Image (cartoon, rainbow, N blue to C red):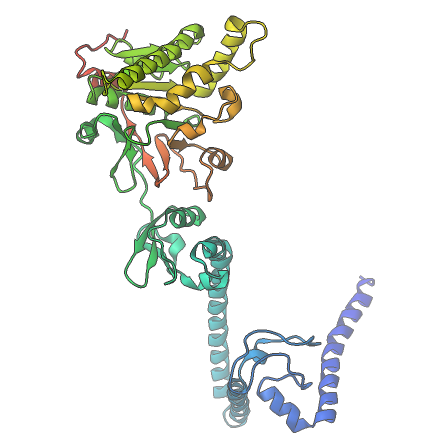
Length: 502
């Protein structure tokens, strides 16, 4: 206890000396400049020393810059115009005089009024402080990062970009409606820029929908996003499915409930999917196959399924060939070369003019990375001769040509590949062959490596949820769900034979 006495004495001395030192500083200024000059300077917001370190004048606020090297702290009143500080100072002086007069004439009423006023002022100060804290948090956590990313796109300074972003009160608690707006400068000539939309969606801590108001002033409106349904049953969407043309199928439904159709026709014939465990891979592969087989009775489907279960329900359907025995990789090897031979024959017929249109041949590759590992092991142990390269030639001789040339003669590949690294595919870069990429359950590093764009969208969890990435769009969809037996029967409906599933 006695040891605390010196510490308390030091603290007490500092507390007593501080106002004494300040008072001595003021007295020195008074003796040097005169009491009236010092009081006038204080009344108009200038430091009592007479030094002027801001650009504020009597009639104009400062531009917030500080000049020179002030030895004292520059506070808010030093930046205000002199006439504003003068009015404030006169008002404070008047209040003090009235309070003193009231304490002499009506002390009880004055004390009650003073206490009430002080309480109201403290309450207002607390409310203002809370609002400022919220604004600071929103600016730091949302607006400032959002402005930093959008500023170079819209060719604005980050400070001007921050001013263009307005958030609605209580936006973080809203489940529906508008959350905020971004005013687009007149100098911006783009329309509905998907990069802006993706950046906004990525930066928001809650799912949002971004829409554009194109009338002047152009405004980006940010609304709370409606949640996807957890299940969309295949049998409930038959009308939409049968409306698809040959070479098309429904990948799922967007947040507005509209079908998102993927087409293998035209310039985007090959589809690659990166879907991690628990994202609904088996149902997606099977529901896609069921659609294309049902809608085009003349097409063929060849499936490579080392997983052994995804395409098994399609076995026995006319026009369907399934390779799903990982212990007989030689059959899969020959299967790819058979497709390559068919492609070469189609090209020969087309070149000679004998045939220009061909039945669509669908290639479904399930668990592509596992297939790559097993096919390399098969090559190294069963087919490789002494002196031959370590890379399995199937990639350069069959699979890559099919991916890059199959479109012209109606051969389309639909592949599920968790990883597009070249080492899996005979050190060949196959990623450019896939014009459409589907991502589910991905990590940011996977998205950057496969899609190659930033910002990385927030991954949405849940079975059946998939992000479709194409050159002109990115859209989240909820996939179709159906029982395996139902999907098998739907696939075989227009093919005359429904296989027995024993």
